[in-house]
Structures are given as C-alpha cells and as structure tokens.
Image 1 (cartoon, rainbow, N blue to C red):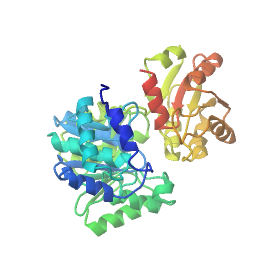
Image 2 (image 1 turned 30 degrees about the vertical axis):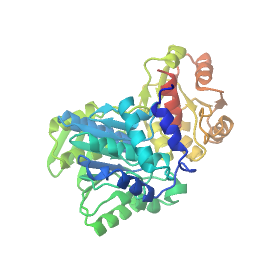
Image 3 (image 1 turned 45 degrees about the horizontal axis):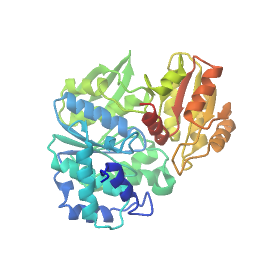
Image 4 (image 1 turned 120 degrees about the horizontal axis):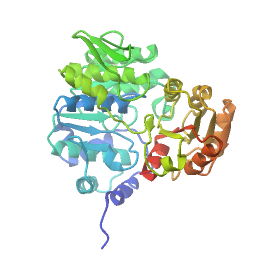
Length: 423
C-alpha cells in the first residue's frame, strides 16, 4: 500500500476549483464554520499586507519577537521549495505528519465543495495555529487584502507595506484601486502600521482608517527610519533607537525594517528585541547568495545570487542593491511569468547588467517563454541570450566571464525551482 504524502493531498486540493485565484471569502467562511471557527482561537495576530516587502517585514518582526523570548507562528506564501515553508509553528516549519493530518481534516470538512487551493490551505494554516499555543501569529496576505483568505481574523495590529502596481487583473489598474484592496485588512479600532506610500495610496489608507476609527502609525508622521554612518536609526514618540543595519540586503530593507520596528515598539518589545529584528532575520530568495550546491559548483569562481522579485518596484530595488555591491561584471539569468510587466521590471536593471540570459520557468504553465523574455530585455537595451535551463545559462555565462556575478531573478517560481534543485 502506497503511503499518502502531503503532496498527494495538495494535488487533490488543486482539483477542487477550476481557477487558481477567485477572490471571495464565502467559501473560506463556510469551511471555517465546518471546522468550529479556528480563526477565533488564534494567538494574537499581526496581519501584513502590501505589494512589496511583506515577507521581509514579517521575517524581521518574527526575529524581533523571538529575540524578545516570544513563541511565534508564521504564515506566508507562496512557498519556494516545499509547501511546509508556508506554515511555521512556534518557530519551526510544520512537520510532514502534522501537515498531512491538517490537510486531511480540511479536505474532509470541505466535503467536496468548490474552494481554491490557496483558500483551503490557508484554512489549514489557521487550524494549525489554533491547535498550537504561541504568543503571536504572523499572517502574510496572499493577494490584495480585502478578499484574501487570511482576512478572516481580528488582529492585534495590522501592517501595510509599500504599495505599487501589481496583479492589476485582480486588484485594479490604479494605485487607488489597489490600495483600497490592501486597506481592506484594516479593522475597526485596530491600529495600522503604514510603510512609505505614494500619495494616491496613502489617501485611500487614511480614509479607510478614519472611517473605521483605526489609529494610523505612518512612516514620516509617527515614525521615521534612516541609515546613518552604517547604522539604522529609528525614531518614534518613545524615542530613538541606534541599531545595526538589517541582515537583509538593500536600501529598501531600511523601510521594511522601520515598519517591523514600529510594530514591535507598539507591542512593547525591548531594545534587545529590536536589535534581534535587524540581525537575525532571514528571508530566502531576496538577494540571497548561494554558497553551496550543484549550481555553485558549476559556477566555479563566479558568484551565484538568487532573487525572487518580479515587479517594477522590485526591479528598482534590485538595481539599487547591485549598484552598491563591489564592482564585478553582473550577468542576469531571468525567467518571468506572462502576467508581469516584464519590461518595467527590466528597465532599471539595464544600467547594471552586462547581459541577460532568458529561460522559461520549468513546470510553470504561466511562464513567459525564454524567447519573449529575451526580446523584452533586448527592447530595454540589454545584451540578451536565451538558454534551455538555468544550468545551461550559468555554463554559457562562465565560459565568457569566469569571475562573473550571476544573478538568477525574475520570479519566485524560478527561485523555488533553483532552491529545490540546488540542495
């Protein structure tokens, strides 16, 4: 008899709804009711929405809380290498046995009704958190906010990281429309930490908060953060903190760190906890230097980096990081989804990349073809090639430039493929 795995159950769940994304909360509420409403039994929740920086901000909040001696659940998506990454119980990734039991419980309670993969697996995460004691629960929104499957809780505090144009087909084609969806996580009377925002987005957030009587703790008004002499300086009404720079790379992480620190300070965390938020946070595929594995061996003396950013803001942030690294020829290996603004992502990278080798994302139905990715790069003035795989792309690069800096980028799905196959 074959042993059932979590992958088997997840495959069954994929078949419960014809669409991957279908934004509504009706199906989620129905399944939660069948499971005796686990969303009402969670440890205090910090709910995080935004276009960019959600995962990094969550990672820093978690590091800070754990540095404060607190036990923390965390939910994030999508996963990179294994589904288990989405559900972290008291600091540890969920075990295979526990995941199988949860998925089976949710599948049985759903009784064959239509429900999306993200909805039913989010409910599984909530059920796991309700069944395991902890001091805090961190919930990262999957898409949008208002109709996201995580938006079934009343949090201790909400956090909205920077908003930009992304997922227009689901959230709207203007910043105001997208901001309205993100601001949907704001709850009546519950404070909301707000990171740096375009004016158009901030107006929507403030109007939503005012209507709901939710106190706003906003960047530039109630808290400030900046880099000074190789240190991070944070200031709010409680005073000033002088901390190490975030362990996560890039100037954009200063702003994410500010939102994390504002949340920690609201919760009463110690300065030691705030220091831990900066020094202990880890977040894979965000300018991650690969140190070992088949790709690193193949690259020889070349550096291999990995980043999963995939929209215009991510391209700008990535270009800024590359501009501040030590001088070394930079060559991109890029694969993207056909739902993204590919040229908008690539435009800022044209200033810092010697070449781009395009690949299709393996086993991803919505991948942009390597040929189309190459054409987009060429249109932005980047010397572009294409390859049948990441491995072939790396080989082609090091044959021409054996001491290159190789950055694999363009999609979290490509990053996940790399992490799975480079272990």
